Image (cartoon, rainbow, N blue to C red):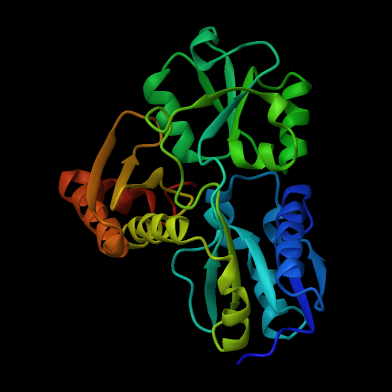
Length: 315
């Protein structure tokens, strides 16, 4: 029988939301292993430092995990806690995504001080978002609105709204809920209005793949339904070579004994949005995600992906 851990160190980004996520995992681990000392190693990543350019232009979401992975490699940390949507889908050895925890609300949230919904925004109103995925879907449904980039941590983004830089901003509902800021949400965008990013609302724990002890200790934290959904969603992204340069969404739901996977690829201006759906047994999660991705390509997504993924596509 495996011994229980005596001491664990969690690598985490320094933002308030990242700290909440790491503290949540710390508390869960201390419930499981009361004799274990669980501490946080707080770090600032390049993704946190570069705020004057969009993620698609500076290297993508992997910028949020590199420093944490270095801490795993050199032994300063045993595990790293991430928002799953920030974890690259092509994670390479020697790293492994050990467990996926139960998902919070996966939807996008509408936040505004002056308007109650997207439909209430007047023509020409400025909407802020950090995501090409959101931008494309907003532009298709609301061509009269102006969509502008929005970077920074959650508090910074809300501050820009309060300063009057935007009429409204779109944020992941889960982050607001986790920080007790649910009162800032004026409404939710349904998954039909704004299909979520792969893994949105879920937490993932990364470890070195060689740490079989860690895999065993963390396994009680895994949520089977969220894990299946995440597997399918990340398969969509992996097959399509998903990056921050491409408006790409993937969202899976367990319905009875079946898994329903919805996915889309879009032009950034919303002029073209290609959708696909795959349904099948939960056990076939990875294959269902791949099927949805191949369906998107058969419907015409490949030229969009190729063009947007070129090095000078966002220059």
